[in-house]
Image (cartoon, rainbow, N blue to C red):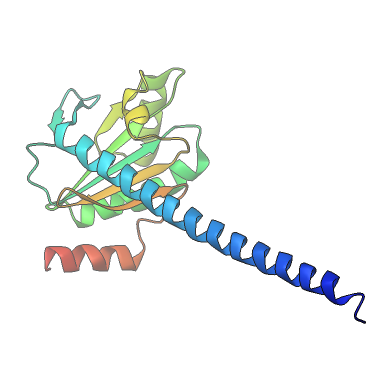
Length: 183
C-alpha cells in the first residue's frame, strides 16, 4: 500500500487540477458569451440611431426620428419555411399594437427578389414595410447569419434578438409590450 501512496496522491492532485481548470474555462466562456451579447446589443442600438431605409413602396424610414417606442426588424426570405411560418403572427402583433410598434421586414432573397416579395405579399396579404435587401449591407450590419432573424427594440434599447422561428403570438411578448406601454 505504501508503494502506491505517491501514485495515488499524484492522481488525486492531477484530478483536482483538471477540475479547477475545467471550472475556470466554463466561467470564462460564460463571461465571453455575455460580453459578446452586450457588444452585439450595443452595435444594434447604435445602428438604430443612424439607420435610414427605403421600403419597396418608396416610403423612407429614419429611425433617429421615430416616434414609436417599439421597433421590430425581421429578416426573412421567400424560400425560408420558418420565415413564412412566423409571418402571420408577426402581422397580427403589428396590427394589435399598430399605434406603438413599427415592424420593418428585410427580405434577403437574391433571385427575382421583387417578384418573390410580391408573391409573398399577395399570398399573406402582407402590408408590413418590406426592405429589399440586395446589397447585404443591412444584413451585414446586423450580423445576420441565420434567417429568420429578429431584433426587437424598446425605447431604443435591444429587448430581444432571436435567430430562427419565433412565435410573435406568444402571450408573454404581448403582455410585456402592454406593461411597457402601460396599456
